[in-house]
Image (cartoon, rainbow, N blue to C red):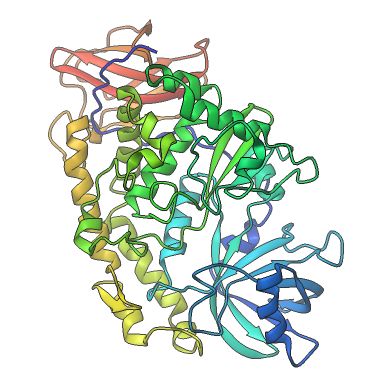
Length: 508
């Protein structure tokens, strides 16, 4: 790969995303109301049995009534680490509908999680980030809310979280035959040796457990750690979806979700897609975003976090650290930051109304939650101010979003991304569609071109693959044909006397 300088203006938000192929769970997660789940246990000592289920990692059987529909003999068990050890009876849970009855499902899903909203006075963090991922069509679990009852006693408000399993893989990647690895308990992606057994206590295999073939993960780790830095991007492009990982890295940083690979070095999935024969990254366990997992930093330090933050030492996260040594990949990472920090994405303008509407939706159920570990005033306050509880400071959501955006806006200017400006000729005024494209694209200049321009299409090595006819000054709507061009990621440059305006374009 040639190392070249890619000068980005404000980038257009058309992106190549993973596309879900089925609709499993759409009704469940798209609903705007709070679900009601009633677990009916058969024995008086059910809670002791549930506590034991966490120790033995086995399911305990009960009946479940979900929004008035009965599901007999489902399996439930307590789950989690720090969320389990809080001083509250409200534990996170995993629910298996076909544990006893084969093929029993809910909206075509047979498993889901109930998270207890620990370490979040607002009860919003996990939902906000999950909705952001879903809106950008990035592979991560969907989240909604549920009121949970034990034997008709209200136990509290939970987030209902999608399970990452074969249904999830089939929906996102149209494939469920490959190996799914979870980066737990300590998935730092470091090389140990070529023996698969050396990695058994660092990762978990969640599909194809009977075959128990870890050779693909070992090969992946070998490529991450043992190949020359000078060719690391070319090497890894053959073994993984690098842009997918860069999106993961960018969003963990933007949301300061540090209980992740870039911080604590775990809480993620990698899936070996059997169709593309490459590893794909999946978000997981995002409930500590917006600065809850602070790695001993103050609120101000988290608000000012560098866009290349990787914990200390950064080399302990070899995938991210080695990729960041490639200037072109670092520039590409800045592109994803620029995309996600658009005004209609990560900003107070976009997120404050969402924070208010979700708070209104859950307020009554939070107030009546007998096992809520904060005060009602802390629930209200933490949207706008820092709340001190549990020996930590919880950043106020709205000011945190504003400060985080300001910090990253300043950092991204060095990469040619200028957020929130509207000067004449700034690409913020442009619209590009469709993107991805197959036959042709349209570029809209609302105020018209102020000079002649020659559109040129470059691949990511800097090679010009096509030059198009000159566009005259004053034009507002420009049609550019791209049929016959090899699928891939390109830069469409509108070249004029005053310089170039590069636009990211995906052709399929």
